[in-house]
Image (cartoon, rainbow, N blue to C red; front, side, top):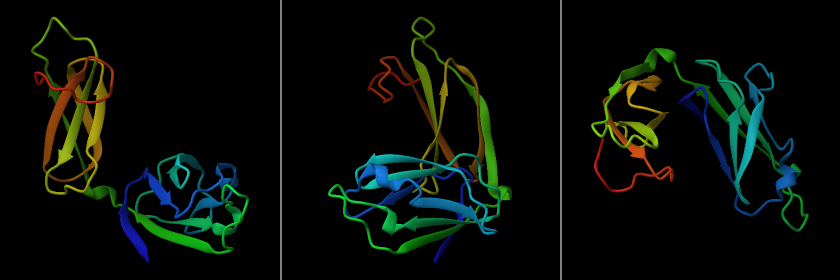
Amino acid sequence: DSARGIVFQPDIQLSFSTALERGSAAGAVTMSTNAGVDVPVRTQWLNDAAILLQPVQPLAPKSWYTVRIDGGKFRDPFGNRGRDTARVLVFETMDPELLSGIEGRIGDENMTDTSGMLHLFAENVTKKDLKPYHRILSEAGRFEFHDILEGQYLLHAYRDRNGNQRYDAGSPI
């Protein structure tokens, strides 16, 4: 099995059926090109049974990659090793010809209280399963979204005056 059309900087979430010892993950998950060249990745534990894998650099367009999970290197919290089996995930990155961009200006009618960052989102209205693109702006003005999938987008924004990184009810910008 394989996947196609993967973005150049994917967030690959690996979920396991049981809790794992975090120190046992070193070298257990690797990524390589189809030519066998190792791809440097960052790993981050999301919880005791899930790892986020991210390439350090953007991946090449229209290229095949392999993620290898060596189950025998993992240990559970009691020190038991996982099965000595490997899982392999294969995917191809997307064609950059399918990407586009959005740019414009955002205004703020409230000129007296401009504290807090502006959070701007571009949400694809035809592909609801896609995560919205997000930009954080220090002030009203010009914005750009580059290398986003072609489509129709709904833009929405809010000023985060209390710094909680969430929209709180009030007046829209």
